[in-house]
Amino acid sequence: MPSDHAQDLMAPPAGGVIHDRGYRRYEGPRLGRAQIARGLCWHSLRSAFGIGRGPKAKIIPVIVAVTMCLPAVVNAVAVARGNPPVVFYGTYLFPLRTIAMMVFVAVQAPELVSRDLRSRVLPLYFSRPLRRGDYPAAKYVAFVLACLAMIEIPLVLLYLGTIVSAKQGHGIWTQTGELAGGLGVGLLWAVLLAAIGLALASLSARRAYATGSVAIFFFLTWTLAGIIYSVAGHSAGPGPALATSGQRLAGLISPFTVLDGIRQWLGGKSPGPIVAPGGYGAAYAIMFVVLLAASMGILAARYRKAAEQ
Amino acid sequence: MTTSAEGAVIETEMLTKRYPGNITALDGLTVSVAPGITGLVGANGAGKSTLIKILLGLLTPTKGRAKVFGHDSELHGERIRTLIGYMPEHDCLPPDVSATEFVTHLGRMSGLPATAAKERAAESLRHVGLHEERYRQIGTYSTGMKQRVKLAQALVGDPRLLLLDEPTNGLDPAGRGEMLDLISRIGTEFGISIVVASHLLGEIEQICDHLVAIEAGRLLRADSITSFTETSRVLIVEVEEGAQRLADELSRRGLDPRAKQQRVLLRLDGDVTYDAVRDAVADLGLPLGRLQQRRHSVEELFRDAGEPAYATTEAMQATEVSDAV
Image (tube, rainbow over the protein chains, first blue to last red):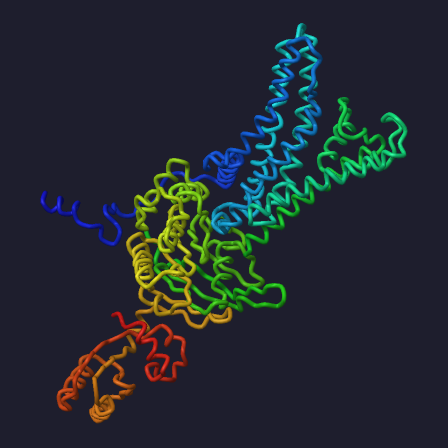
């Protein structure tokens, strides 16, 4: 018998199977739909930062994260030297945050949705216990969390860097209140930008097109808002109090200025890229809801179609 | 651990699916599929993929209903999908991950906890015959290896039913044979019921216990392969010359042969037929090239029952395809 055994081991693989121990059934516990969706969410969150992918996939997330954290560090140094703070919780550094998030969303949203569309892997998800809406929902939650991390972590750093130099408890208390407001604004940013990014990216299976469409949408609307804002400002008097209606409404065109309009409408004090919307504040809130609902609608329709194909 | 013999794996009742634009994909399909390996055959566009989507609970039927293991597809799609492994027809693999990572991830999506997903992914890949290659990126795989990964991901969640849509698509003849062997092994040794959708009838009949044929969304015929083929088998006699003389001689001996070029086809009724052929060939002194029994090609199952299947040219061509007996 031992020689037979040795012969078995030396025998060339028959039918491509060497040591087939036979098929074993799985008798262990099975996770429910909610846990599977959570697993997909976690998997997507990792891929939003390029984790579990090659080194190339990590370049943009790292650059954006460093860029976003830099102002907090500069501010900490400035405050430690006794200078007034240079960065505010509500706006952070608005142009920098806008550009950094444009890049992050445009590059990483396709990572979450276009890859699966391109490799046509969706039927494999839809043939599993997940429901049709679970896939886009998991992707959305994951991307909101990823955007939140990009926006909120620098704010927390900003807070920590500031309170280290704070002399009295009162200063810390004020800072904490402002941080809370800033985190709230950051949440609005994450919720809206993730939705727009995924919706636009899901329309194209080609990554380059997906990134392009997100970037073009953000950049065009941003530029357009700026042009209309400055044109409408020609007839305006000096100071925000005398801003024209055109100026107050121009911000509705770009998601980024919509977000800042809401911030100012909700009482944010630090100066933003646009004048306070004044009486048009509710219009900014409505625009926020419209943009969010439209993006969700596109996502839902996109995956309803995908599930039936 | 096989499914109970009396319980049907799949049952549909007057299942109808119409798409917008009045396109009818399924038209009152009523069929029952028993445990084992079942071939779902039909031309492209016959409604095979629509049926699969409905069984998975991804499409809502316009009329009628479908049940998988007794669960209604419309109401309990989620439950059904825990019991099914699905291998789509088209390419569905990302090129830039390894087979191990991919199948593990899909194992988790099937509801396996992390460790179990890893173990079962390794096992599934081993079962389909992928060994060291499984750590390589899928983009570097051959078509045959990719088909195996697709099968492994269907198997990873330990399903009770596999739905395989055109599993031999894009494979060369050797690859087709290997894939069919694999499917046959999974069906017989693993105790998993399998529905194989295919438009290649000759292929399907080699591995299936049952057959469901649909055309234009209607049931053409559902039957077990053995019960059908036992009743009528065909004997092929190939002679290098004198096929017509042999046919005449066999007619004199009370058989009903058809001569086609160098071949004589006749209905096989046990040893009597063999004896008659032997005697006729010996008496005429003909050079016998081949004597072969074959089952009815599946294509003939669906042809008009009144016409002797082996008399048609198409049957001759089918013979040549399914010669490997």
